[in-house]
Image (cartoon, rainbow, N blue to C red; front, side, top):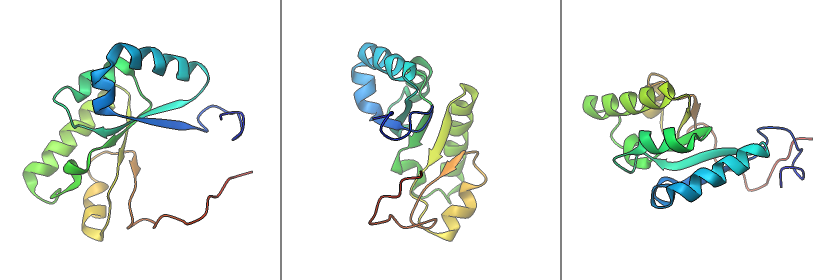
Length: 136
């Protein structure tokens, strides 16, 4: 697949659910290593859904994590905002980028800029396209 989409490092990112990784840590570690060897980026989806999210990310060393939806809901509340900031800071400390999804309105967007996530995603930024665009 990597060769088909251009062959350069970072052109393809595969995401795995955190729960699946946590249930198969040894296999995940070897798979992440093998995919890394062929310049495939790795992402963890639903990050923060377990009590040991940081430890899991530190063990498998993904390139990126995508926060679980529960972290974005009610992010305007001070305690939820501090929880998200803390999780992102701890994730950045282990040199893993954070994608903050589910940015659906201006209020969430304004908060998203302040929490330290490197990537933002959601309908507020751009609705999904019905066509696939491939850069040449």
